[in-house]
Amino acid sequence: QLQLQESGPGLVKPSETLSLTCTVSGGSITSSSYYWGWFRQPPGKGLEWIGSIYYSGITYYNPSLKSRVTISVDTSKSQFSLKVTSVTAADTAVYYCARLVSTWYAFDIWGQGTMVTVSS
Amino acid sequence: QSALTQPASVSGSPGQSITISCTGTSSDVGGYNYVSWYQQHPGKAPKLMIYEVSNRPSGVPDRFSGSKSDNTASLTISGLQAEDEADYYCSSYTSTSALGVFGGGTKLTVL
Image (cartoon, rainbow over the protein chains, first blue to last red):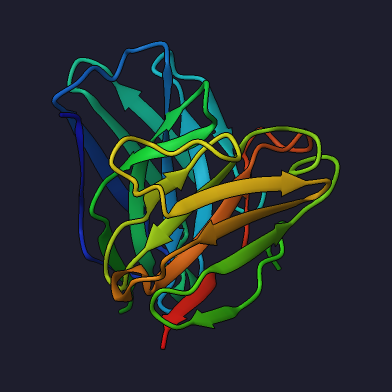
């Protein structure tokens, strides 16, 4: 059964870069049927789709974050990663990775989420 | 402001039925059958409950159903149970973005 697990620092200083990795286990990251996505959820607020990536490296970003976000994939490690530059307190959130079933256009498997706090 | 509009809250008593609406435009909800619904309990990751407007993934109780009319999608939960108390989010493919769009979420309270 495929599982996703986020990892990375839980505390990042303002103006620095937030870096997270999502490890895919129990299945293939290179399947043509799926995309891989990053979401975030500030405390007490709704979900925000940050962006998505295909195993070939094709990426799609939320225009509101595009200038600060990079999503990449490492198929040899079954991982995909998120980088957000120049973070502020507004980037404090729980960050989730998830699998998008392309034929459904729905995210069927989610990681447990990881809390990232931006603070000095 | 979210691209899809959901009521902030709904409530119902155990055994009753409730419906959560999700209103978009002809560029998203109304134009495609790619509406999905997610359930999120506090401190937990979202869980896919409905995809392609009305399909349930394996393991989701048939008390959960989805439908769509024009630019509005709906999630109906029948035979409400205490464990259904959670936040619910709708999502849709959109022709205006490479990413889909989400609603702001609806908090369901089981009285």
